[in-house]
Image 1 (cartoon, rainbow, N blue to C red):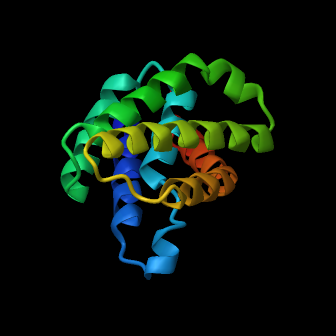
Image 2: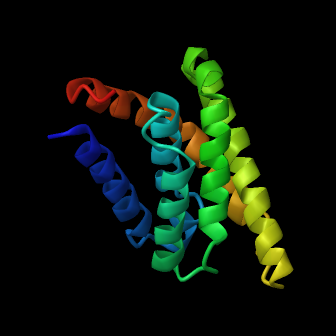
Length: 157
């Protein structure tokens, strides 16, 4: 399997995990799988996965979640930009510091999303963005180690 196919497949799996129906209590703490995959690839291979991929993936999320077109595209493009700008620093952090960085990026994404929804007059409760940010940060070590193994196995550079 070629590197591009592995990257595409990882995004497809992330979309599937994001769309699996869950009970409401679990829905509010579901990690942002698509954002995790985007951040990982932006950190691991910033020359192949970047802001453009973030924008395209965000548009797919917008269409699949019936959100305002461009809402997720904007936030994921910004997250991709920040991940690429910080990728050399993030890569040398221990995994617990990486998780804290992911938490900060997720809080940034939530803030932008809250701002956009607030401008539309549809601002949800703050917990809708805080809980997934924490669960995403907690899930980061597992996702990072799994995706690093996949990247090494398929020798994606």
